[in-house]
Image 1: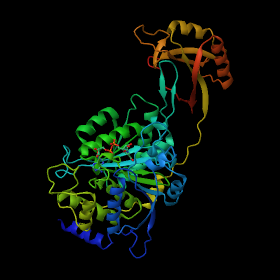
Image 2: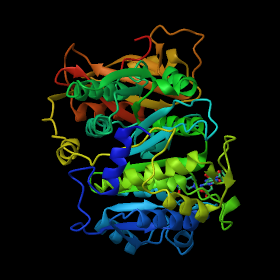
Image 3: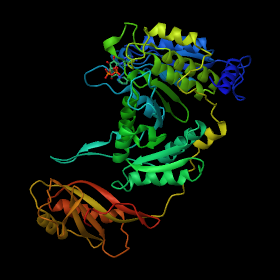
Image 4: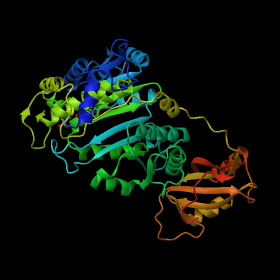
Length: 509
Ligand code: NAD
């Protein structure tokens, strides 16, 4: 081992590697909510807490009950009021996986926790541990920072016609600012050199376009970090084939959901990856895997995913020295071939159960890995954390309504017939400019080849160029259209913000 690494470990053992670390004599134990979960949850949580305890983590676990039992006792989200109050007190949760009972009527506990507690950032490091864990990507070391609250996950879905269903994709400026700033701060405080933004802004110019615009704006304050943007489709393909080329990836919710599973799969075993869900007030740490009912109660589950989540928690709690101690001991255990049964790489010397694996890590506390890279955590910078949570609201723009899109359900019309019926119902303020079907212009001058479903978007704009309208004009138009016997499903106002159109043009417009 290099002299510098030996010195680092010496300093860690003596509790002096980080000047900001709480000293062993003065630090108090930090209350942390802990849930043992279902399936393999209790086994891996006991193993993890035993390692943290042996490493001297300054935490005071307060157990909360969430998961299957709570679901079955009548709480549809799997969490009871007393658990919420513990969470609000401790503001940190170390969570073992839970089982969602099958059958209808149960809400996802994870989604409920994320949304209720405002856990806006999902952070998932995906690392290759070759040759000790089989992977085709030995150099892989990527962190996916996924926006956790917005996008298509708002759950706002409607059936609008016989043939058309809709899910609303909501992207907000404060949401983008928060996640992008978090990703840059994470990169900086973890010694990462590049942040890649993955979006589909060539198609979704307004929503994904906003995400990338914010990335560029905020990125300007981080000249020390390399920055690039990749379109999600080609970016995902590159991640799947050359993951070693990526460092930190920041991306909206849905893409992040998919990417983080792809990356975890590439890294090797599902049992090895941890994750953090970070909010402004509360943070939750958990393994990425589920409750593994197929091996529950057998004492063979791998506690590593939860342990690495706990390491992230220690860093969050500014106990970087303890995090460093535990992570390096874990790497050393892996290298010595002491593995649980799920780890495949051909370097296993001894297959052990959950508890024996934890004991092996405990025995190696203070040891450094010999082949894998030594890990060294730093306590997060308090000022950086404050910067991360600062999002001054912009002053409202000058908004003008210049038209309205009226959506109509009609399964038996044609673009020409609909165009002529609607033209005859124009008002003094609003004129029909265009009809689209699934976003493609079909009136005026559409193509006969374009397939039309029963869902028409009819764009009315102010009669005079640059003119504005108000809500009464829209109501008058809707009254006329309804009187013509047409079925209006919904409307979307067309507005400009500081003179810039806040709506996309139709394809072909
Ligand atoms: P799973 O992750 O529980 O299991 C998938 C496979 O990986 C199984 O063969 C399992 O034995 C294995 N595996 C998982 N973790 C392991 C570990 N630590 N050590 C060794 N092997 C491990 O996924 P699943 O079977 O689809 O889901 C089971 C339950 O978990 C479901 O009820 C699901 O809703 C729930 N779940 C919970 C969470 C969570 O709480 N965060 C996440 C995913 C799934």
